[in-house]
Image (cartoon, rainbow, N blue to C red; front, side, top):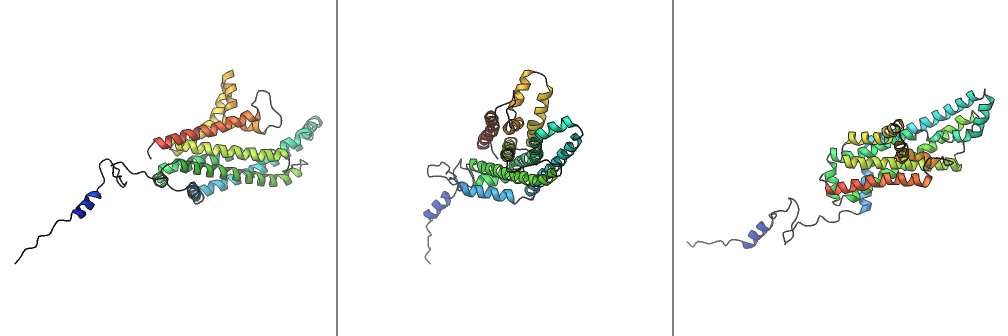
Length: 308
């Protein structure tokens, strides 16, 4: 009986050895022949990333609840402000001098009724901006997001655009609805409100831009701090606590510094006439833009440097 000798399969051995990742190569990542890890690639196109972020935004029930709450609050406070303005008009009617003064500026008082709920809208949408970014890290979703978008910056910019555009659109629509409800209420007190006037349109656009800016600042804070509670408290401190503290602390420095806080820029942007000692409209716009850009740039730098 002759014995048969089986030759080893060198090609199989090479294939087997070639399947092993080389030293220094992360698991699951292919290595180049030189031993260097392969590039993760450019990732999906920006439009696909933008569509993905919008899908994540609109499919969260908590997000839809907050958006609905914002609209409800703005419309409700607009109607309440219109009613309060009318009641004040009736009380002033018994005083002829005060009534003449009220009649001289009645339109200016009535025109602010639809935007009276902006202070609450900025708090809700600013907190939403924080949550949309901080929740990526607390839930571990950031690992999946950045695995799909290795460069990370496109994912941040896409979410930034979604938050800003949705906040602007929602505030604008809510202001318009509040105005439509305020018109018949103010008419009962002989206070006219023209929603098509230049001042009404200016208030709608500026306040919508302002709320969008607050929402994007909140998103940047959520990316920097990576903690929902910490980000929301930082946002509240910046827009509500610090202005009050600067107002209570005596000194010219704090009086001057209050002008450059983001929450105090909207008055300068919506003022009919420039008030002495306040910022010009273009200066206020520049200050608000700086508050939006600087945290966003810092967030993107940290997003590239830190691990998820």
